Image (cartoon, rainbow, N blue to C red; front, side, top):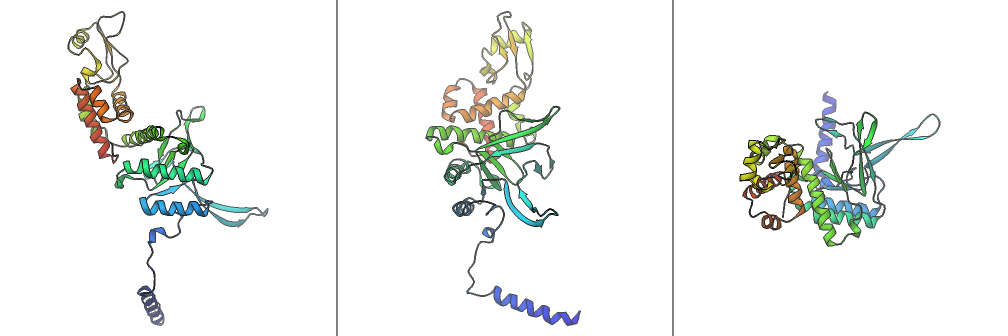
Length: 312
């Protein structure tokens, strides 16, 4: 062991000399060559865009799920063999789903520039820094296949956002042809999809206060009952109760007093739709006479903000 000690000391001394050299230029180690920063098959122009995007946003932007390809050699028939590093949306830290994903890619550098600009200007400013994805895969469209008894079946409607472990895929096809009004509508649809993804991962106790106003009515049905007549007298409209929709409420031709309420998940979905289909000012003006609706709306906005989505 002693005979290796002088050599080891020499190596360490040499490393120290070079490590302390004043002539060496410092570079951000996160911008060294890596698969996420310089993925397989992009042009020099897009590589420059990806590096600038990461420097500005600290999020990698991708346009293909193939990150790298490495030549391994030839097989016995002389055909080249490669290994691939690809984004696997089905993988997470807690498990692996059987769903498969297919993407229609953006074809031109101009489309990729427009997509990156849209994400940078319209979407990322609405996500708090601590809740931004590690990377974003920007594509024309996403097709998700789930395993059914009959085989793999495409999910309908197709997702516009899907969040995996290391990457969030976003369908941005056509944004380069949208006007400002269309871009604003599409931005809201993407934010709603992101919120729905996040909502699916949080504990239901988070929504306890939101659900408390209508908890005794979810999934219930009544016609000409004492409860139905009470509701008709004291809560003439759905919004007086705090609902935005129901299967039916005092509108049945055969019964004087009738109600058929949806499950609580639909109530939550109605309010999420409301938040992303109009401005806060518009919603408040439309529902000024319904204090329960206003209170539930504000509670849900606070939950969404806590999830890292910045609302207007």
